Image 1 (cartoon, rainbow, N blue to C red):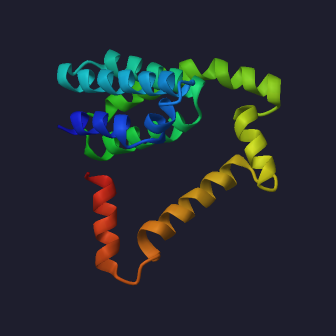
Image 2: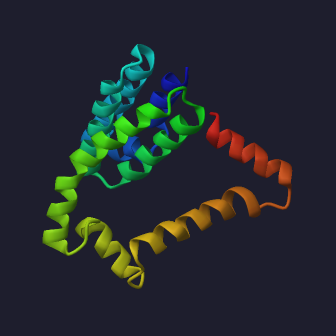
Image 3: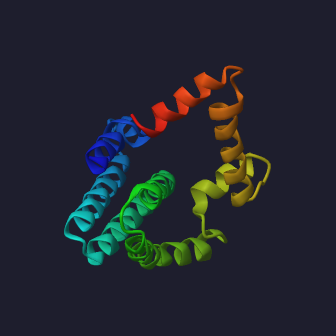
Length: 167
């Protein structure tokens, strides 16, 4: 059930769906993410680590196309870590991600001087030259503020969090 609802969320609940309507590289990134998600589900059903490795490879291929897949992959890994049965399998997924992202990081380091690439590097420069990790930290703070501390009604916060986590 987790994987069925997750696949539906990837299709309809991410910006990749809405951007994909325009016919750019977003469809390819969403396709690789869906294949990775499917392979992860297959790995859980068949209880074989190799499916997790290939799931990680497909997540990495999605990242090659769009940086947003970093966050999508992180979210999927976190959900599997806390709700999945076999945490050891996530190591194989991480290995697949790492092996397929390493060439991209090397290429971006040589072309742009940073592993995060030109697109994100330009964005951070426009934001006052903040580092990548500072940018991620600020996004986490914004998300926390939006979900937890922005409303005086604590009950409403919990409802919002549950609505996001369990659609």
